Amino acid sequence: MTLQAEYALIFNTTAAKHATLAKEIDVARDAGFSGIETTAAKVLSYLDAGHSVSDLKATLDGLPIYGIGTVLNIERHGDDARSLISDARTIFELAHRVGARGVQVITGPLDHVEVKRFREGEPKAGYRGVLGYKDEERIDITARNLKLLAEIAQEFELIVYLEALAWSPVNSLAHQVALLRRADQDNLKMVVDYWHCYASGDRPEDVARIDGNLIYGVHVCDSLPLTGGVPNESVLRDIPTGEGVLDLKAWTDAVKATGYTGWWCSETFCRKLQHENSYDVASQMRAQLISLVSS
Image (cartoon, rainbow, N blue to C red; front, side):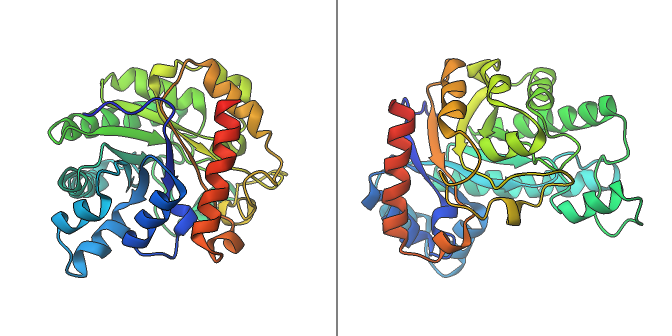
């Protein structure tokens, strides 16, 4: 596993959501980013169109892929366990082929509506994972799975980095640290995502207490006000980073306080920005990151 550059600023695929992978790479390079974080779906689309891995590496021309996402619903167990391992191996193999350094994994359910249905006592309409389990059982099941995923990822020389979805039952920073400690794998880390932290109830002071060695990357992002209930990502994140309610400097300073010195990227789920000129958006986002991280 290759060591990452100190305080690297990398491009996140959300800022070029509607672009091809080749265009995304060009946008990242043009804006001066030091690498990219992208999705398995976008990489597979590129390869399925007839391009080769050699074509992709030539297009990257040395620009590293810090992460590929995503292995979903990592708490899958019982009859769902086999599909988890199959999905993970597919993405791990892909990440290894294209030279990625890490793979993102997330807690579930992915569908926040199913969480809302559960909380309101509505009949099950989809995957629910460990909803309805006691907290200790949730941690135990998820930690066992994370340990197994990290062990498989070692075969491919990959980092596995955890992001806990704000609406999932395993969502807080305390949950994530407990999972990493219990799974106890050197290639298992976490990402600090400002929005998921905020929407799960954590604050900058909670981030500052984390051991920086547990952090693989940082997602700098913003939010509209959360007034209660199950967080709806598509609504709350439809705001340019820097124009929402989050104090980005306070969150960034909190990450720095952990001693973390790895990569940072700026995410955007703002639909308006995603339909604007990706080159301009990327340049603006990088300038914002420089201001935050270097201050």
